Image (cartoon, rainbow, N blue to C red; front, side, top):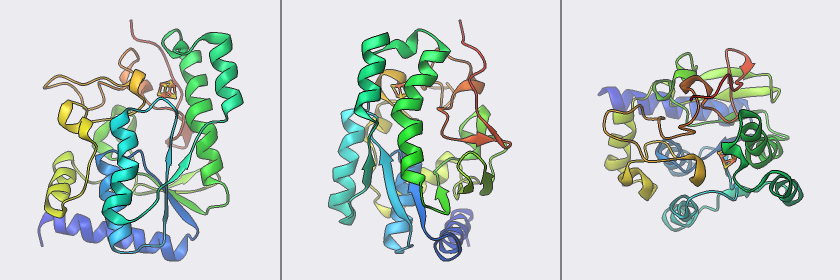
Length: 238
Ligand code: SF4
């Protein structure tokens, strides 16, 4: 069995265990490459795990197009969670549409409104959630486990692709004809909201294009915990 075949088998075993022992469980998809691998595995093997995505209102058109691509390819409607419009309107009226560039606090508040609150709604009532995070993706993820306690959401969190490399992801996508976000072919290995994501240059860290004005240790959006602690933004790069 090749290394990738073993990773695939292990991941299916994890997904089966989630479906049987942690029902109801949901998968939070950002519609990026890793998430499409998990989407493919969940839907083709009919693992009983719902899939949702956070539509922040600031996503690239290419990312939004993935919702239709998934519908066309798999006949599956990903559940979409949007921010509370009154909270967005209030933030924009008080601080401006792009105030997240102004300070760490403004960035955290925008992520809280557009991502964290909708995530909490999406996770409500579930026993576990699933992410497409990988250990090799970022300085904040080096200790990522396949299964971990998520005290912020009072449930178990699974990262079935924790052991996968970037090559594993793309080999799976190519081998299985998985649809993927067109931005990945335009220098975006990691994709978030449009104003907070840029393409990277060859040799740059894969998450260098996310919140590029902040320190590497800070590049999370409050959706995840590390070592039992909610990830906090520590400082702003010059
Ligand atoms: S990534 Fe940027 S635009 Fe998206 S919610 Fe966070 S601060 Fe706001």
